[in-house]
Structure formats: C-alpha cells, structure tokens
Image (cartoon, rainbow, N blue to C red; front, top):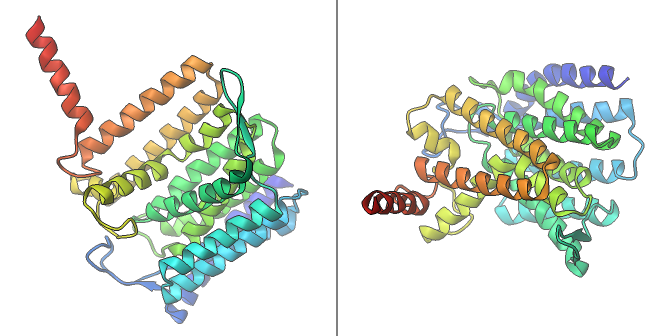
Length: 353
C-alpha cells in the first residue's frame, strides 16, 4: 500500500505543479529579477503548494496511525498559509517569524515533540527542564529558515531537502520507526515530482510556500527520528542538515563581521560563492547536492561509530567545513584564520628542519 501511495504522491505532484503555476500568475505570486536574484525573468513561485497538496493526498490515502499525525498536519498547514501569503503579498520578517513559532508550538506543545534531556557519553545527563520546549521551538524555526536561505538556485532547496529526507527515512527504517519513514517518504515523493519542473532551467519556484514547508517537516521529523536522548542521536540531525545549517551559521558570522543586521539579505551564500568561482548554475547545484549527500553519509557512519570514532568524525567534519568556507570566501575574502594558521605551522615546520 505504501508504494502505491508514494507513486500517487509523485504523480499528483507532477500533475498539480502546472496548475499551481497558472494559479501563481493569476494571484500575482511571482518572483521578479533584481541585483540579488540569479534568474533573469519573472518566475512563478508558490510551487510548494503542489508539494503540500500531494503530501496531504498521501496522508489521506495511507492514514498513518500516530498521535503526531494531526499536530504535523495542522502545523504544516500554518506554515503553508504563511508561505502562500508571503509569496503573494511579501509579508514582513516579523510576521513570518511569529507564524513559524505558532507552527512549531503546535507540534511541540500539542504533539509533545520535544527533547527533555540527553544522556552524556561519560555518564550523567543534561536535563533541559523548562528550556525543553523553547529549545525545541528554536530548533524547528532555525531549520525551517535554514532551508529557506539556501533556496537561491533552480532545484537547490528541493534537491537538498530530498537528500535529507532520504537519509532520515533510511535511518528511521533501520531503527524500525515506521511513522517517520512513512512521513519522510511521502514528502520525498511529492518533492521529487515537483523537482521535475524545478531543476535547472526551472519552470516554477517553490517559493516560501515550499521552502518553509520542507524546512518545517524536516525539522520535526529529525526530532522524532532521533530523540533517543543521547548525545549521538542529538548530533545526527545536525549532520544530516549540514549544508543548510553551516550556510546559515556562516551567514550569521558574515553579518557580524561586516556589522550588518542578522536579517539583512546579501549575495554571499554558498551558492553565490560557487557561482563567483566560475561554476555554472547546474554545476553549482550538483556540487551542493554532493555536499548534502556527503553529510547524509557521514550521519549514517556517525550513528554507527564508537564514541571516540564519533568525536574524531565530528572534528574532521568541522575542519572540512571551515576550510571550504575559507576557500570559497563564505564569510569574506580575507577571512581565513584556519588556512593562515596552517600556513604558519607549515612554514615553522620547514624552518625547523
């Protein structure tokens, strides 16, 4: 039954996307070119509505039995409505942020999706207490916006989200979590159908409608799938979402270094930096896909690693992320602390020989 449902989600997304495209032009949900945008012509957005409707169709057909089902549907509906209004009217950042908090609160407070404590690897535990709910809400809102920030090239957010969903569903299947596997697979099938029209050259953008929905679903599923209250299970979703989280992190660092507001838009995200290095639109997207797949693979390896091996893997990942960020100028052309330190160590080593 699940395979038939996944096929229906995929096909319905393919069939619904052209209809949503026509609707986008009718209601004025279009994206006009400017100095920050890569596209050169007016493009319809709102494509995320096709993903959402296909997902809901799959939920109606399969009817997963879980106390989390209705909170997830209601929370994602709040996010979708917010995205639709933003794609048409361009809502202020404050209104979108408030709506995201409401959506996150639905699954956290009503659905009970929150981590109350984590067990430490060397014994003992960290009890979040009253901070459990706000920290979980911060995670959901943070990941939701991280996916939204990487939505800058044709097929980028949809592809990266698909890779994250594949990793989450695969690991959930290994752990025997049927609900997370089902939800992630339904969203994945719906997203892949939309990607048929969204990959370069895109015929429609997913808009905030899609980016916020995918970010929201991925953030919630990552909590449900890896809430075994251990440090390992706490770190796994962070690794899976390595691309959007690291891009968001360096965007914050970049704005602090340049003394700009955290909400200030710029043209220095990961995809912008790769384009400046001379990669084509398609090559840039594929490179970031490869990065996302690499993080997904590392998450799987990390989940199976011993304690010391896990810590070593995290250290290597952090060094690799920092070196890539410095090499492509993710923070700034002159921001290369680790590369400078390595150069000094190399020169010192050569001189001492």
